[in-house]
Image 1: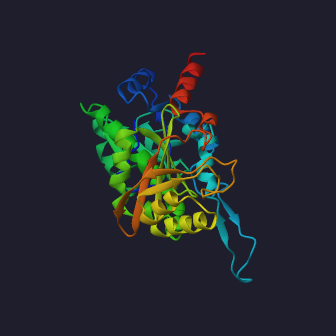
Image 2: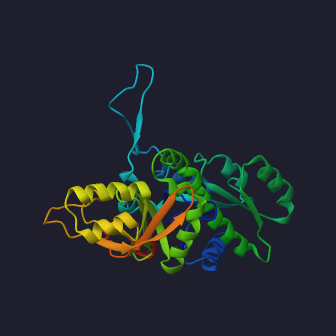
Image 3: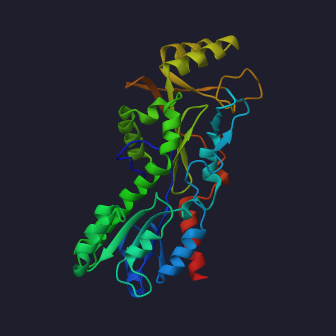
Length: 339
């Protein structure tokens, strides 16, 4: 399992859980063994219990849950400003239950307690993808449900490629889940300075990085601007992204503080990007702060000129020792089931 971005960048992504509901417990036991072992499947033989647990669970990926707050200054009595807490995106990685977020439901149509379509109609979260498992006699019903938008996919259980199609459907719907859940944040960021998030020229850059570093989590960060990437073992990389305006600001601050000439030259010529130990991401003349690292940069042109570099030593900067990695979380879930 590695991150894919087939339809554009999102400001946050992490592995999520797929809920599988089928009254045949043997089928429930077999299906997870035929899918990606890194895919978390939570199985239920009772649709009523599955719905009860789904409605009880928190939805962590939905924007506005602690990310928005009322700005203290009002432009007029009839208008109100809201501010977006960007640090909340990165803070998501410290939530050990982020991986329990349900993004996809796979449900059998023919169940005595409740059929699959009724189950899907009772799901409150509009971002969750719904896959219906059908028999041959259910095709007309499934097509009608698909056309009405009640379900997103339907797969015949007796299809020889059923497991392959199911794996593809889960992957696609998990990606769509974050596209939908992060749409508000993405649109808000597009109004600011994080232009690369919506610029298609940057997608191949991220794909190249992921080919060499198979991240399963991704979080947008500002100051410094870029993407924090985390693999299944909790190791991290930071894709540092700067525009000409960013480098100009860095140059002015570093120049005012008497930075070395080699730092100023690299900033001026965009041959290297600065990686500062200071929390605000800018040059500091404080002797207690570790000296700036200059990392060779690559430049591409899209809606803006972007300069980017991959920073490898980021564990201390982002306190990655505090996070629960995806592989460890999966192991903990397996241990809990066995215990």
